[in-house]
Length: 89
Image 1 (cartoon, rainbow, N blue to C red):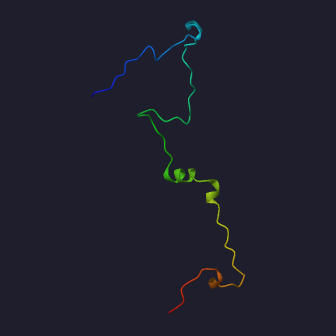
Image 2: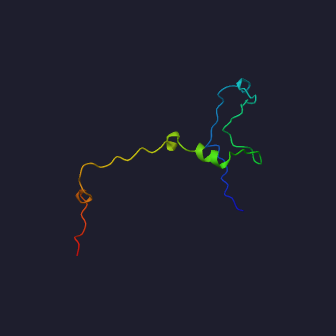
Image 3: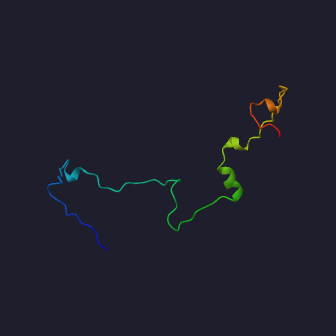
């Protein structure tokens, strides 16, 4: 495969020393385990059974009972709801 290579130009780059090398801490960073991290490639992955997995993704109020319907006691019919229908032929 052919690749385009742009040689670096000393005119386009400039570096400055901010602090002496000895002042930088090069010791490894200690990272604590993350419970949300993805498993390593080929690592174990635990899954819940199907019923638990379904309910885990739902909002708590999604399982609340639906309230009863309120009957329309206004006495108006369906014809007065403002929807025009074609006259019967």
